[in-house]
Length: 130
Image 1: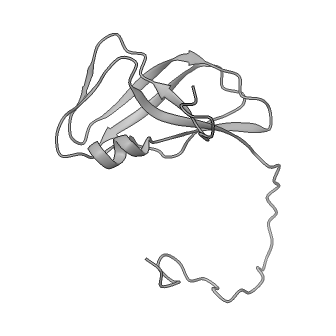
Image 2: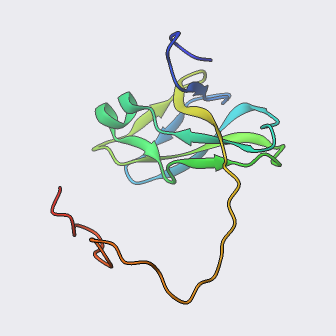
């Protein structure tokens, strides 16, 4: 469900029978209790909830996670605890958010040369911005 009229994402809730204790550094795959059919040409992106991440260090181990249009199984959220201590995940707790986004058609083409840019091959940290 969306919690406000202008929320970009749908909150995903933990569909667990009893609390899951997530110890520091541990990863748990938390079921959400539903499956869905994402329309062709779209993906569902699963992202961390900012409150859980900023207050407790609870986030997704792969962020964003992608649910492809041809997946029909139950939705799960892979949570990791980067916080200082244990964290209890309770039944019904909002644990992640999900956006449904278009996937533009793209074709990869092998070329022998790339065009030049001002940045060139400068990688991480090259632009000088933190």
